Length: 530
Image 1 (cartoon, rainbow, N blue to C red):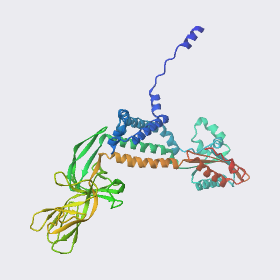
Image 2: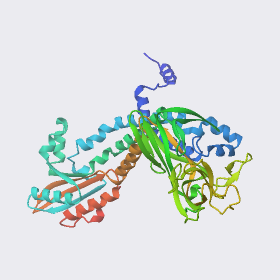
Image 3: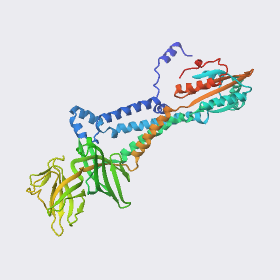
Image 4: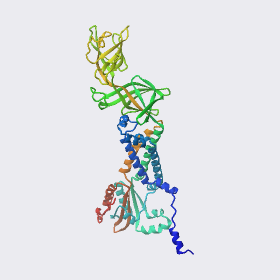
């Protein structure tokens, strides 16, 4: 027999700490609070990635140089310069994806019952406890007539109605509670149930699917793809691209072989003011025309513009930047023959040529926007601006030797060697279409199109799913038909909505107003709870 002292000692003994079991860990990983916390952290990290220029973005070198030594050390140690490829960012995506999957698996079966097994029955007390409820007197000769009126009222309010009587309902009630059920429903013979937007209940899970699509696409694209650059000068052909590797302020490039060859056939820059510079602020669009020569699939011509990238075999070509040295996409030459014949104007595209009526062959060799002679006495350009533009031509008269000719836009004395008439003509640059020396295309290799799936399917799908969730709702309403007396039947109305409660109040009020034949229960008695 235990003594009082033994009892006290037993109570005083320290209890062993409870250890976490598998169910507790799963409950924690699938909790909404944990998922929201992870999502907030993800948003914060994404904002850091937007505020701190990433090392693969143009202009990072200048940004890195502007930082203090302490900022460089802290940002570099924490991986802020390449945050979207950091291990903790990808780990966060993985854990958040696991949370979404577990939470969906845990809660979806309950949510699905709203669609597969709608609540067709309701007691008087339950209906009067709903956020929206009312009791009305409806005039009619029998229950069928009342049921028809309720069904029509529900339909006009946008609800699909379904009527059920007590006997039908009782079959869905367990045997041990059927007696109680019959007791609370003995004064109600029929129940009319109406609902709209029931699929809105799974809207959250549609959001989960598109979120997972975004996360998965981002992860796969980072693991299997790469970024590269390729310089496009009209006439150049290459089978290699420059793969980029970043190490903070050091950007290394090395060549990678392509499974096809790329030839630049033309570059064009659409300017806001054709008389202005080729700066970004004066530009509407960049266009690069390329020809892809693939041993397996033949020759393909493509056009890469600022808002229209080109995709081919997992490679996506984007406009990245230009080499802002002035050039000309095409030129117009004014030719004055030395034999006194009238002047003529000819147009030549970049890298093109033209044959004059007398058989002289004129080839467009190069364009110098700010003509000068370098230290070696060779023609060069002082700057990239169009200060003193000159077109350099290779002219071959019939049966003669090829001669280099300089066509100036300004007036140049015939006594100067570079401006003197040659090959029987006085040459002048009449017009030219401005374009840069070269374009640089950015190439993103994504063999599985993961980025496309993530940003287009996942991104736009997520926007649509959020609109579906927040702009629509699942609305339910019940009407319990009670016993009639002298041509009047008591109808108990109750309803609820999973969101947009104020809009549901208007629908419910319209139903009550339409059914109430006595006016004993005015609209202001409706519950305004939301």
